[in-house]
Amino acid sequence: MDKKNQKSKIKNSVICQRQMTSLFFIICSLFVVFLVSGCVVQKRSCPALATVSEASQILDDYSAGIKPLKATGNCTISYTNAKGEKFAQAFPVRMWYLNSHKFCLYGDVAFNPKGVCFAVNGDEYWAYARPLGVYVKGKINTAGEDYLSNPALLVDFLQPVDSVYDKIVISKNIMFCRASQSGKQKKIFIDTCGKVTKKIEYLNRSEKPVLIIDAGEYKNVKGAEFSFPYKLNYKYFDNKKGSNQMELKLDSVQSWQGKPEQIKALFAEPDANEFEKDKK
Image (cartoon, rainbow, N blue to C red):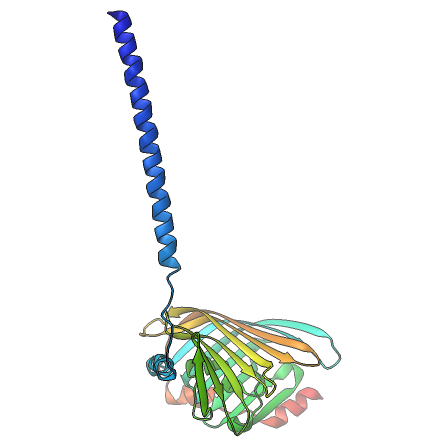
């Protein structure tokens, strides 16, 4: 009897081990299936855009939802001067946005909260860097296509298509826009899942890149019902000096309703004579 019991226990133990092994493989198989199915969901393909009107509708819907906002974060600029010397500067920034024709960005440089500024007010713009004694201003429609001489391009991803582009085609979720009169060209890369602009490439007449804007990490704006990119990279190409870059990393973006006196102070155009004093 003892031998029979011992054999029975051994047999039951073997059966139990086999069952545990089978259960282990079943669990592992289910885990693998879960991971694979999860990856498939994460890598789902976004719908392809078939027509220009379909793409324009996505961009128009996003633009229509944008409301006034204010944001804070940090800016890093890497550039090369006329002598070929490379420089890099990082500083805190604050941005106020009313609409695509009225917004400003201030950088805290050299203990001055308004040491650097990019501003658009109607059809006019100005940009300056007090530590360098640099100040430029002019009309938006006559500005060059770079982030310094045309601050309007800072937020072009919010409303990238305008009436100046009379020839538009689309291929693989990329809109190719061209202005016959000026020769300006740009490519708008659309994220059809998020229904936002993820990148814009500005091209010269030879179709070489002049400026590339990457808009990433779209997040919902606090107190509003639209999203905004928390990371923006501007890469400006210069045939002689290579490329310069500016990157904005925002840590806070929220809806904003400015008071009249506050708006007036933010969009007060600086006196050009002040920059002449800085040069001296």
